[in-house]
Image 1 (cartoon, rainbow over the protein chains, first blue to last red):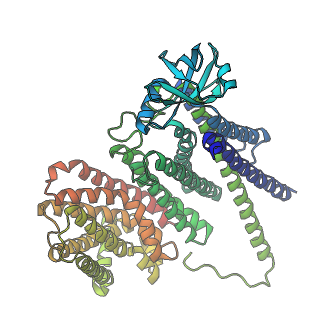
Image 2 (cartoon, each protein chain N blue to C red):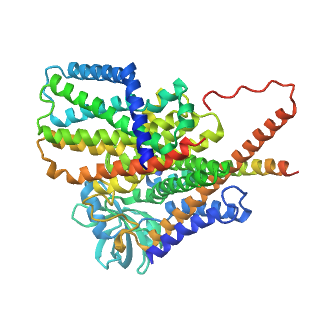
Image 3 (cartoon, rainbow over the protein chains, first blue to last red):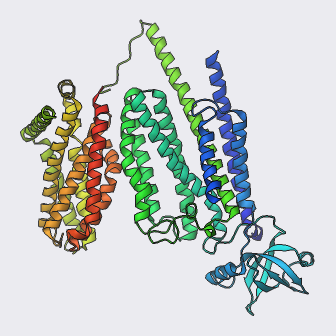
Length: 43
Length: 362
Length: 224
């Protein structure tokens, strides 16, 4: 317990980093799918 | 200098949002990498940089919280004796600190000339006692604001999302006018995508703000004027989307909702710019508050250079995230529209199929 | 201008005549007001409320009565199918100003009714100067009429109209609500008009801006 209290900022950093990672993966997935769809249309 | 850094980040974010590719064409690879890196950097720096206060600031925090409380202070060690050191803070104020509770290995590192951030509490005899070492020789620190302390870090997320919620409003407004003048359906798609992502950032600003309010002002919601205004802006977004979902023909929807959006300029301007400033409240910038807000206030104490840089990075990274999301939304809806258009085209080519009944009232 | 003015008057007269013939809006609004005032009177019971709360209650009645009554002006035309005929025979400007006139008159009648019923049925509803109350009610009715005319025209274009009317009116008249509650509260406290100049000017500015914007936007809404 003490560990989490003393290092609460770093714990927050890890959580925020995980949220950010999830968001970026999600956005990149949509980006890739859109690129595929846009490519299909041009042909 | 401050205006240059923060303003540059604001303008840079908007320019990069519109320049390569605009809202409706794919962003180049370097652009997406820039967005991801600046976001990662923002998250990392805003939690990694330690808070290093002064004895004066620590005094205020400790007195405000009771005896068991502690506060981070950046100390430059001048003299090291057995079990205690003499150090000075940024304001060259000197104090003796009892370090007997620290482990032996750490104590031997605190030689004269090193700087260290110590978690200090007030000891029985009125002097300071070090509870633990937060960071040895920090290269960069954030100042301790006695009322905000570590919670001040929310500033780099809360303020940029609130700013983008407002910016989204203006962009949507501009595209609504453009649609009314030119009649291109593409402008309506841009307006509604911007508004949708703007509503999301509005929710983000509300959530980060109310969590912050819980730990700073005591409750999640206090009906502070700015909370009122963001609540109303959310309601306005809601009304606009309700109107859009009630019209089935896309031409009609675009025209009517653009008109309503322009009409909404009246209350939105009132609630974003007028109302929070004419009513007394808890946010900076309210009536009777000592500062017009950390960003606009020319007084440097509200924002030191490190915070300025972080703040600017926050605005920049959030702008890129915002424009990326808008870009994705616009592009996917353009593809949708083209598919619908081409399927309608195909239907016309096959006359034996029954024509669809047109929506009533359209 | 002269011809447009005559047309606007003609449209307003037509609306008032058809209203007097069917008394749809008046009946609905009248019943609504009666119900609301009764509910408020019963829920208060023998309590004596402080002026701030009565001002708020009064405003709730004014808001919902106006929204239910006024937002129907174009919806009625749409439902009867007469809107096409109107669109063929009249340009946008006279239609807008004709409807605006009717709505302002209706708002005045409905709000006047509410205020009178409030004063009769709720003890100590308003302790202030009656002239002040008259001015405030008049200005607020004008503001509600000005804001709700264009909202009604927008709603006529959508489906689920009765649901939308409250949702869409709310953000537009919110500045009016905040200023109005403030004024009514201060009026109930016995303050005179001279300390309310700033708010009264803000409401007047709101009315002017609302009419100007509606006039420009209505033209786009009217053209098919």
